[in-house]
Each structure stands twice: as C-alpha cells, then as structure tokens.
Amino acid sequence: MSRPGGRRAIALVGAATLAVGTALLSAPPASSAGTVTATCTKTSDWGAGFGGTCTVTNGTSAALSGWKVEGDLPSGTSVTSVWDATKTVSGNHYTFSSLGWNGAVAAGSKATFGFNGTGSGWFTGCKINGLACDGTGDPGGPGDDTEAPSAPSGLRVTGKSATSVSLSWTASTDNVAVSGYDVYNGSTKATSTTGTSTTVSGLSPKTAYTFSVKAKDAAGNASAASATVSATTDDGGGNGTAGDKVIGYYTNWGVYQRNYHVKNIETSGSASKLTHINYAFGNVQGGRCTIGDSYADYDKAYGADQSVDGVADNWEQPLRGNFNQLRKLKAKHPNLKILWSFGGWTWSGGFGQAAQNPAAFADSCYNLVEDKRWADVFDGIDIDWEYPNACGLSCDTSGPDAFKKLLAAVRAKFGSGNLVTAAITADASNGGKMDVTDYGGAAQYVDWYNPMTYDYFGGWDAKGPTAPHSPLTSYPGIPHEGFNTTDTIAKLKAKGVPANKLLIGLGFYGRGWTGVTQSEPGGTATNPAPGTYEAGIEDYKVIKSRCPVTGTVAGTAYAKCGDQWWSYDTPSTIGGKMKYAGAEGLGGAFFWELSGDTTNGELISAIKNGLG
Image (tube, rainbow, N blue to C red):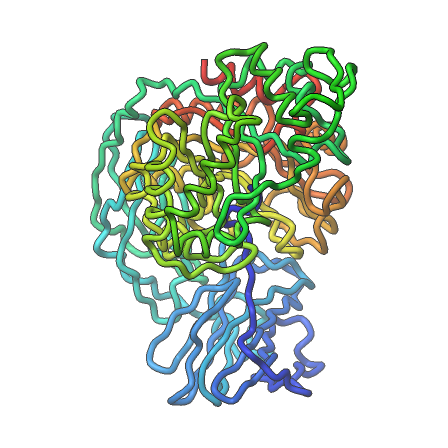
C-alpha cells in the first residue's frame, strides 16, 4: 500500500562515467568570490547521449530569490529531460529556471539540477541570471532584464469538482525565460506554478468563479493578465456529507514484531467504528492468487489472553490464526465486512502474468477466498496492483486495458453478491500513472476505489525537499504538480469515476527526513529520518509525542524537532479532510493501517466523527 506514485527515481541510461567530467565552465577563478556562479558538468557519456548536472553557487552575502542558467548546444545535440528545473528552448538556446522550492538559495549555499541529452556536443556561452557563469559582472541578481513576458493565452477549464477547478493555458514567451505563473481567483492570487496547468482548490460547492493567469520571469517582471475564464464548481453530490465507509487495512505481518493482533482492533474501540477491514496481503504468484503467510493467516495458535473472545485455540480445531480471530470479531460485530487484499507494493509482480489470462486469475482468487475453511470470514476481494502498465517495485507493460479486463473477470467470477474493490495510484501528474491505465473504464466493475492519497513525498528523495506526504491540496513550492489529494480526486472524476466510488485515503504514520535546518516545507535534508521499523517512516502513535506538530500546510501537519522534519495527519487535519470528502460526495475513507493508531483509536475516531 505504500508509495502510490510519490517515489521519484532518475536512472542514467547505459552510461560509461567519464574519468574527468566535461565542464561547461571550469572551476571559477579566485576573482569570482562574492558573485553568483554556475558550473555544468557531464556526469556520463555513452556516445549517442549524455547525462549532466549544473550547480548554482551563491557566493554573495544575500539570498537569491531565483536563478536561471542559459547556454547554447550545437546542431544535433539536445537536452531531452531535466529534473529540479524547468527547461525552455529557442532554437539551440536552452534556459533552465529554478522551481518554486529551490529558487531561494541562501548566501554561501548551492542549488543543483540535472538532465539527460542526445548527441555528442556540449554547451557554450554559459550565463547565470543573465551574466557570465564565471561570476564576472554584477554580483548576482537577474542582470538588466526589464522586459516582461507575454501574457498567457488559451486559458481553459480542464476539469472541476465541488471544491476545485483545474486550468490549463498556452505558455508565455520572454526575452530570457519564463520562470513561472501566478493564477488568480478574481483579484486574489490563488496559487503559483512553474508549469502550464494547475488545480485551484479550497473552493465552495456550486459557486461561480473567474480565473486569470500572469507569467513572470526571474527578474520579477510580470506579464499582463490573460483573458479570464469562468467556472461553476459542482454541487458535490452529497449535500456536504460523505458516505459512511470507514475501511482499515490490517496486515498479517503485524502479529510479529509489531505485536498487533485482531484483538487490538476490539480493545482499541476501532472495531465498532469500522465498516470494513481489508486483510493484507495475499500474494500473486504465477498469475494466481496465493496465500501470503500461512502461519499468520490460519495456523498461529492464540491463547486466551490474545483471543478476541477470551477463548484459547486448541490444536484440533480446523482454523486458527488471523482468519479465526477475524471470524470471532465478526461475531461481535455482525455488520462488519472483511475483504482479502491481494498484491501490494511487494507482491504486485505477478499481476502481469495474471493479465495474460484474467479468467484463470479470477478463478484462482475465488477458489482461495471461498475456501470452505474460511469462506464465512470474507465478503469479497480487494485488488492492489502497484501499478498496471507502469512502474512500482517492478515495471509492468500489460497495456492500458489490462486492469479493466482483469477486474471484469474478477467481477464476473465473484458476482454481485461479493464486494470487489481496488487500491489504485494517486499520481495525477500529466502523463503519470493515472494516464496510462483505463481507471475510468474499469470503475464499472468495482464497488469502490481506494486511491492511495498518501506517500506523495518521502525520504526516498533522501536530500529532500521536505514536503508533506499526504497534502490535501497543492501549495506554492510543492515539488511535483498533481501530487495531492484534490488533484487526484478531480482527475479520477474527470475520467468518469463516480464520486461515491472514490474513498479518501489516509496514512496512520508520518514520513520524515534528518539533516534539516528549515522549519517550513521545502528544506534540504541529508537522509531519511530514523524509524522504528524502517528509515523515513514512523507510526502516528509514536511520532505524535516524539516530534510534536509545529505547523500545517495544504491540509495536513508537519513537525520540526532537532534536525528532523516530519509530516503526518492528526485528528484535527483528518477532520478537515473529512469535510472535503463530504463536499466532494465521496464514499467515505480508508487508511493504512490499523496498528499505527493509538491504543484508544484517536485517528479512526476522527474519521468516524468527521463523516458523521
């Protein structure tokens, strides 16, 4: 269930690293002290292409508010991809501009971006903020640029929901480079972005709004406003009330190091607040559903002290383990439904083979879920394929229709009397995981989707920037467009998924970094922060006291303690997210996972109270 699309990895393509990097500019001379410089170096060269990095160094005594690096490439050489900067091209002239989160470079600090390219040439005529990259000339700043960009054109509405409007426009031009855009709701600046699309969130249902956009450059010049466009938000479909589904994932491996058992669901008071439990995980091997952990699932013997009903297991009974304890939990809560979830981050590799014969896969899953030893325990199946026709722990190339065909076969086999659900990506970026699979077409076969609206950002980007792992909305400086709950839900609705088939996802944990000096989001780091079971992640029940909240951003909380920076949801921020779910008419909420909550169920109580 972790890492729904927030993980970002950049791989060099078959490269032979140069013994000595080819520099656009050699190390700046001593006379460049007190200036802003840039050094660009080839990090690899494989003949037909190359990888490179550029480092901007602020040698002045004042902070930079933005930067742009320029250079010319010879004919036949081009930059094909770039990260940690935006790229604009005019003929053979390339300009790389800072993003919202890395434009502010403190005195004596550095900012770095990277790129891949094709061809054998390299840059000439390097400039940083309009001046030579060796620091000659005025010490930093944007130079003498006084010309504003052209006004953006073609502003249009590309999607909307009860609380958001998605916009897109045609890029502006500038004599140097456009560094970003400010989006206005009426006369109020609503958000900023470096791209040519965004989602304005935090709006009221069934309300008319008028938007415009202005372009800006690194020198602070702003364009005239674009033509305006108007949109009326949806009515939400729920009259301000979300559905009542409260779904918690229970992990079979929790019985080991975590010492978390089915009985804990009862003693914490969580069982009475849950409508469904997703039991994670069954494995997917050879294109079939298989047992994940036989000992934890149905063999572990429970003593009276750890049993839901206080009755110890014996060796003669046909079913023990989690399955038997879940049966006892259902006896206490007859309305509680339990689904068996298959796949997850680690065990999704078998779905590619399953997609080659969906009917055989569905048969294997049905036979396992409906095994006579535990058929009464389960009320359906949850498919957690991370990710169809995209990359997770491994990459899948099954095609955009594979997920729909797989779910169609599962629904046909399980029928209307069983629940069929799916956990899906939350990556709403342009051309991201959500765009390579037909989630809209597949929605007809599920009772609901669980879009994993958490883990957008985390310590897998060891150097940062620090960012909340589960932002409800976008915010100025967010590292990646489309990585927030509002954009996720808006995009799924635009693809035709009904609101009541979408649940908002919550993480009962925090994600964090160490080596951080900045209190607000957007700081640099050195490594993932230490965690009890895994670096960069910690249960809410631990982190709430270990690193108490110091601020909020984009509808979630963050905390700075020592040199560590964490983000996590609290009862208060969950309350805000439940209001959003109601405004959007969503089907309810789900969370990963039960053992992260406090012993008295603080977070699940906040969900239940928020949904009403």
